[in-house]
Length: 228
Image (cartoon, rainbow, N blue to C red; front, top):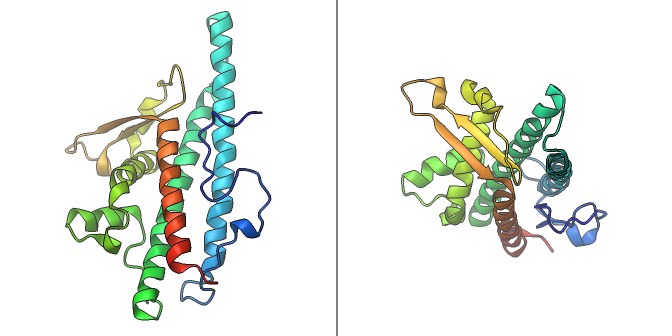
C-alpha cells in the first residue's frame, strides 16, 4: 500500500516504523505531574494509532468511490454508513487530546525553565484555556501557539460538536463526494439562543496543517527542553 497520498501524521515518527533512539525525546522524569518523557512518548505512539484510523478511513472511502464509479451506486449496511462518521470522530477526539497534552507539557516545561521548579498547577492545560487567554490579548505562553489559533479553534469546536452538541446527529446524511470530509453541527451549550455553526472540513487539508503544527512543536521541545 502506497501511503504517499494519505494525510498521515509523521512529524514525530514515520508511520509503523519501530520506536528507536531516533524518536527518543528525553525530558524531566521527576515533575509534579510525572515522567514527562513517558508523556511525550505516549503522544508519539497515539499519533501512530491515529494514522491507522486515517488509513482505514481513506481505504474505505476509496473502495466505496470505485464501486460508485463502476456500478453507479454502492450498497452498504446502515452500520457501514455510520462507520465513516465514527472513525472521523475518533480522529478528532485523539487530535484534541494530543493538542491539550502538548499545551500542558509546554506550560510545565516553560515554567520549569523560568522558575527552576515545577508548577503546582497547569494554568493553561487545553485549547479552551489557550484560546480564552489569547482573546484577552495576553499572549499565552509567549505567543508560541498564536499562528495555530485558527487551527485549534476549528479542532476545538468540531470536537465539542461531536462530544456535546445534540443536533450534531443531523449531519449523518452528509458525505464527501470526492474525498473524506468532516461535517459537524455545533450548537454551543445546546442553547437555541446561540447560532449553530456548521463545519465542512477537507480532512486531508486539516491533517496536513496539523502535521505542520506537530513539526513546529516537536522542534520547539527538542531545541528548548530536551535533556542531553
